[in-house]
Length: 445
Image (tube, rainbow, N blue to C red; front, side, top):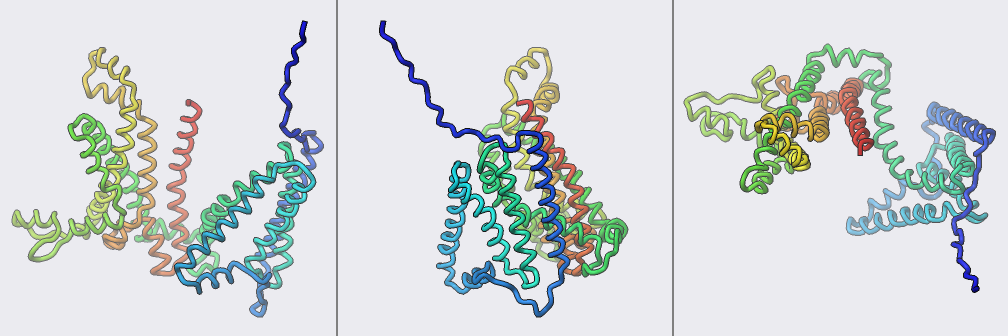
């Protein structure tokens, strides 16, 4: 009998290390990471509260971001574009190289990760040209951040380099999020408790102004009016379009016509409708007043009729731009409702309205929620339409517009920040609800 040998596959996967898998190791890791974060926060606070004297010069390593942009600004505009692309490519290339070699075992890659953890934060901080009396703090923060990253990666249960690789992936987006969203949000909340110049602490005085001053109160009331009426009317009209256009001849053409306003910016839509509402003596440019004068009436200043009427006129513009969006989303959702359910309801003797109410609407519930919350958030943040059409006059101001108006026109940073925080509190529940709804949908799938 001949023996046959079976080739067993060779395990080429690198052995998985088990750093800190024991309770004692995990406890040590937690303690070191906690102490590291405390030290970083402490040094950052020392840096923030250490006043820089006017004679204190900035330290440079021979190159800084400021000097780079000054040099770039002196170049020909046609040369600036390729220079930016080259620099961007170099940065991305370095990150990709580090990501590629990060999880590989070996002393050389170990040293590479250690060097990257210490050198990259240090260079990033020094490129900002800190003041001479802050260099020690800057270097300390950089080394603490890098050392903590390296230690956490070294003790990672996933093995060498994986945490380092993960952080490199997340770092660009995280830095953008930190600088563009988190820091401004914290700064705005902080400034909302100070006076208009941002120097004296006034407590809740700015928030009291928002809800007691006629301008602040009008902005809150109008914003709530927009948030209640705009999404409701947009969804109702969009749903009606979705139902009836799906059954009409020339469906594609009709949908294009309804969707066209969505492609127009709020500024463009505001200018278009401002001509519609225009009122003047003699020949009328505005369509509404042309109709009014054609029947013997006098021109009406539609955007000056207060209270509420002029706000409703602005709401028409917003609804006009959002109805097409609601129609497209809801039309796709209706087409996804199983035909078998509609046929079963029809066999049960139900009429068209009953099938729509008991089969179609429950089938598109998730899409309705998404459209409602999306349009509501957009209505809470509206600025362009009010700025272009009325400039906030005649009690048409809203939180988004008044926030900018208080900061730019009156230089009142305290009032502007308080309005921004109130607007954020209005939007936050909708964002949380939308996120939770999407999470539940993923669980069902």
